[in-house]
Amino acid sequence: MKIYFSHGKESGPWGSKIKRLADIAQVAGYQVDSIDYTDTFDPDVRAERLVNILKDEKEHFLLVGSSMGGYVSVVAAEQVEAEGIFLLAPALYIPGYKVQDYHPKCGHIEIVHGWSDEVIPPENSIRFAKAHDCSLHLISGDHRLISSIETVEKVFRHFLASVKN
Image 1 (cartoon, rainbow, N blue to C red):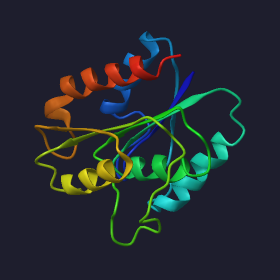
Image 2: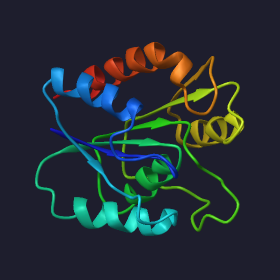
Image 3: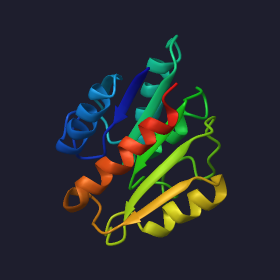
Image 4: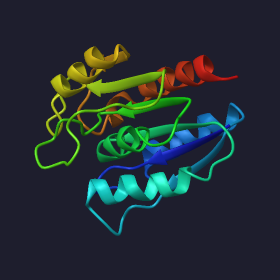
C-alpha cells in the first residue's frame, strides 16, 4: 500500500514532520510519496493535483495531510476512495476556502491537533471529528506539532497498524 503526503501552505514536500512520518511508514512496509505543491498557495488547485495523481492509482492508498495539506487530502478523498486519512492540524472550515462541507469517501480518519494551535483553531478539528465520527487526538503543542512529535509518531504508528491489510 502507498501513502501520499500533502504538506502545508508554506512548507515543502519533505519537511521534517513528513520525513519522520515517512520513515515510520517505510519501516512498516508502505511505499511513500510526498506531492510538491510549492508552486501554488491555492488549496483547491492542490486538491485537483492530488486527485489527478490518485485517479489512476490501481492499489489501495492512504492520505496524510498537514494543515492546508489536510484540507487537500479531505477534498481529494471526495473524488477518490482512500483506505484511510491521517490529518495533522488540518485547515478545515477556513474562510475563503471553496469547500466548507466535507464528504470524504473513507471509513477510517484520524486527526491530531495541538491545543495551542494559533493558526487553525482546534475547534475546527473537533467540529469535523464530530460530524464524521472519527478519532481526534488533542495533544499539547502548537500548529507545527514539533514539540509533540513523539506523540504524533505514536498516534501515526497506531493509525498504520489499524489500516494495514
